[in-house]
Length: 409
Ligand SMILES: *Cc1c(COP(=O)(O)O)cnc(C)c1O
Ligand SMILES: [Zn+2]
Image (tube, rainbow, N blue to C red; front, side):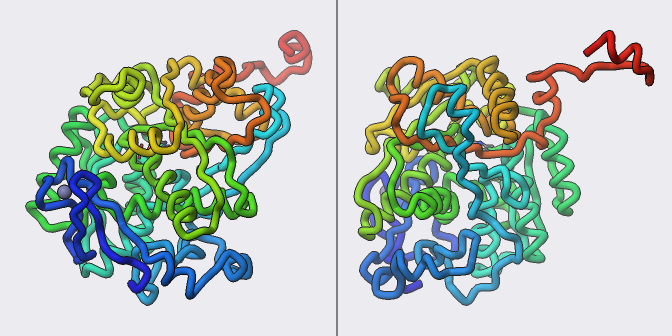
């Protein structure tokens, strides 16, 4: 990996070589010692450029191979991950009173969430490290995406999910042939058990916060936004936050491009949580260390009371000059309805939480009506049909008779 210089601890700055099995800083420990992958931007710029990239026919995250911490020769799964569409839905813009609103629909990945960007890197790294089995704990999407990528790569997967994981996601796991462990407890309990088992059995660890390579996969959503805008960076990028890895990845992506000299400025990043579970929003708004929170939200993918990547997440928002906001679950369901009805895009609750927060910030005047904004839809609504029905209600029931239909329309 001539493009990668090494790993750097975000806590103490210590640098390490990117060796197999090294995920966290030994000096700071596995909680605080989260690492960043550092790149040799001049080496990258010797091999590629924005112009060369525009000739690439690879419409997947691997078009950015030089910005990824993998060996170019390692076999890669056939699944097409990334290069999701960036839309400008006119009806949605009108509804929110915004003239420059874009939606990046990451529900269009192979297993229908942004997590595929990380999971595909996980299985490539697992092959590089000769690990036959990959494992993670997840609120749902990291699990289903890891199982899908593992199946495509011919690896085994062992997945830990909390008992409340929606059925659509559990169905995906079983279809992809994962060994599924449904932990009768919270996400926190699930994470802890998976960490113990991973250590005991020596599986490849996809738990995103402590695995620095996965944030690198997630950052490709930012690389794509920049390229899809012809390297004109938006004013704001808005998305939901659970563990904090996705928002950290988005910021890392823009920073890499900036440091490589490919973009002239950086966007402001907005992180959104549900008021039912918002430890990071509270920490940000009250300018204090985060504290564990209850997990009282129907947005299961961001129901994370004990976030695993809080420092990177808060740093992303602060460094960018962005902000954070929490919205009640009713506003998340309303965002689901509005997005669906104005633009034909179906997001799961956590998938549209960013949009719900955006709406609130526009109302408050924090984000201007004419600013260029991207809201990332992080997951598809078919994963969680129960909450979708809760958002919109039941269909009109009629006997097969036109007369009866007339009376009900
Ligand atoms: C995982 C997930 C998030 C949040 O990502 P974190 O890295 O946990 O902050 C948001 N939306 C969806 C659909 C997700 O699956
Ligand atoms: Zn350290």
